[in-house]
Length: 487
Image 1 (cartoon, rainbow, N blue to C red):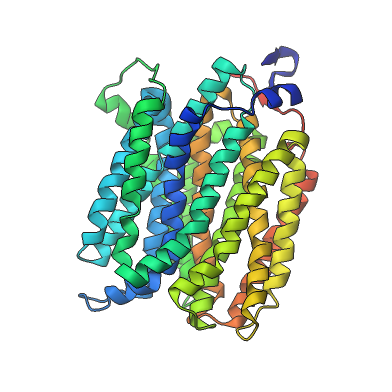
Image 2: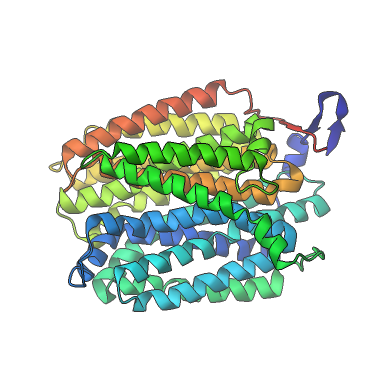
């Protein structure tokens, strides 16, 4: 890396260094990839199991209203948004390998206990625990990848490693609905949690054998650790995001404007607190000093709001408006996520050659094209045409995700990549949380053709904004990015 004090920047090496940074040892990347796909897998399998879960608890005390079942999705996302930056900070201070192990153990315990949940509330608690546990792998893995790149490749961007992580997520998203749909039909909804067990045990074994030993030696007391975790900031963040989700959900029934006022108040308090906190959950000062990083987070939030809105809306529409079973709906989603694997591989090569701007432009254009196709869908159209539209929607996520990951790696301060990666996943799952609210607002109960068209209009607006940003943003550079120098 080359310092340029006159510009108060760190210049990241250009194409030659990127070529050098393509290769990562398989023993490093395999356990990281396996750990990171757990979150995507648990996010996607639930999409085709919600109806069965709701019916399964319908006979319990109080039943399982649609509003409560929403938290099976939003609860995991909410836990993830808080846990990602927290795990990133813990990885920086106590060692990435230790935090990677801790997350996997939490996932194992939650997966074993969830099938025996006696009520919907306990199941939601298990999903929250899954969100916490699966949050460790990405920031800890990125920190280990960066440490390896600095030792062996002079800090060059490991494009191949980023692509492998992105492809793993696409694989998990692709296989989640078909696997979940079949398991629900054959063994009931409780079986979808057992899938995690062999994956976690394999990841634990690989991590124990292959991941490098932590070099972090300094320890902290319990009181200092709790203070560093910014518990007031976490509380305000949870209150703000929960209030926003509840308000958005209320728009489809009866708008709760006092709740919006409370959300704005807690959001304002969150910003004030985070600016003054010694170890903030969301480093407002870092984002203010680094507009490229802030823009990456905003694009990530918008991208995943659209992707997960499609991912949850299509099976609901296919089951309620088109009359398909959960397994059939899961198979119909396969092109959406499956083609994402292919597009991620193509995006990885394109990013390596041309940088992230062209990748983000292509992803945004395809998102706009998909919204136009969705606006023409109706319950009477042939299955093959629905599959073709699913193919269109499968392309943009791979391009957008890889482009945003590349800009994250370039724009994050080198000594804060763990925290920055955690915040990236926070932005991703804030988008996921908002997506479920968007589906509730637009799709209708039960789902209808008109509701799908309303959702298509929302997706079109977001796609156009992403396209304008990708074309005009000064922070997306195909060769180099300037970062604020750390004092």
